[in-house]
Image: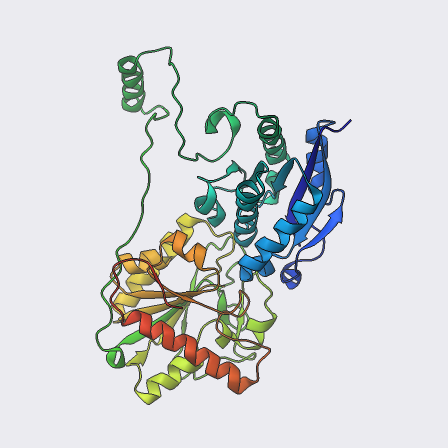
Length: 349
Length: 76
């Protein structure tokens, strides 16, 4: 006999509706389980049952954040579940934000325990890890088998009201909550252990990880925009037709720099997108929809800006690691400085 | 990427649709855009109207670049 009623939230891809071309489908509810729900069924055994699944397009959710949250919340409420599970979303950014937004709303507005799972670099993780339990997963759906049992176990503990262990024990992303407990060894002994390990080059686990507040102060404003050389950078994957550098459609390992000299307007014949994380139809028809070359060129002719920089830089921001993105941008910034660029318009999809 | 460009000393405006992500990654000047697959366009409009829409969004981006700020700011 099933004890607990569970509602599961997944996106259009895991809901088997379609890929990016279906990312704009509104939320719909189906009875019973769909897709990854099967793995949860196995993990729950007879302790809990997914009675309904909500499937929602990632773009629709994120582009209509308030309406989408309200709609999905209403669907969940009707089911009167004991527990809510979203995802796991792995490194899919929009999916992660959707899962975490809904889980947070379910918990605060409906008072129902909620849990999701995603990769630590998913933007949804930093936005919500202090508000809800987010189980750490791998960065692709290949991590499903590992992720589901951890999520299911933690979810059952939550719904039963059992004590939740530390993030390291339970497998969720640290949420900043500290609990007191007694260690077997006193502090000085543990500190010396760590020190000797560190000196010997052996691995050790710090008891006091430093928070990384990596913020950059805003640069001063441009004084005279009519003299400024403005460059375009994008994570939307716009490249010359044929993608000469073969930038990958996801988890990009490189970026490209492309000349805009003599280019007044991007067309379906000249440019396209290499991005595999959104429906490419509109960008392939007219890449100005992602990088505003036509307008900036006109503004240059009208004297509204000093210059549109001769080069633009592009990569695919789709599951691309933070480390890669940092490296790309540092290199790009060096080139832009050498080209005398005063300001950057960065576009993301 | 926005952050690394700003760190290098170049003022940067981030034009994107999901502004909460932009805030989380640490962009300072943010202009909200239309939709994920066409941030600064709209295929439902006529080419003339779409160009006007893009001009308005670029105007906002230029306004953002010429505005002194002390904290993360969304230019609605």
